[in-house]
Length: 270
Image (tube, rainbow, N blue to C red):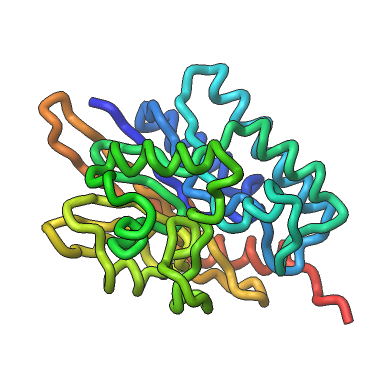
């Protein structure tokens, strides 16, 4: 039996979430943790607080890797401006150089595969695959293609295409595809695990070709600090015969998570 936990967008909530994740790792003898991107940026958090959260995340990842836990940290759309030395809404400009170094130290990937499921930040649509990855049909092939693009900054634009669901005019790409775009343009035959689109509950949707997509962005909050999701993670237990048992790990109670999130928010600056 091998056990993996997939964690959606944390957006600078690492000091709250990672101690709870440690408990799940120990309780269930988890061997691998996959973070689905968007470690960076959140509403109204100060630069100092943002840096503290990311340094905590870096220390946690490095310590757990030394202890033998496999930790995959995927890039999300909020990481890319720091890596590209650009400024987007939400970018913590005064610390962007420090953030970039932290991200580089985390050994980011664009994609990985867990029990036959392709894990990316936002997901693969068939229209993006047709435009940029025609020769990749399986989870493993798509993973290799995505990580190849990510390793070459000259090809990052292929990962950053934005569809109408997020205000763009291109095909919805693996760092920006919205949930509705994944369901409208599903990638046939490829099971996926994604974050990016906030969801109330961690959920699984069936799409074309008998494929399934897990949506895991349950830690995001509104600009006023109200949780948009249940603060859960996806745990996948794979038996020796390949049978897969998914479990939803609820890390906080509703009131507890709501109170924590409202307490961490600072008033908007006038």
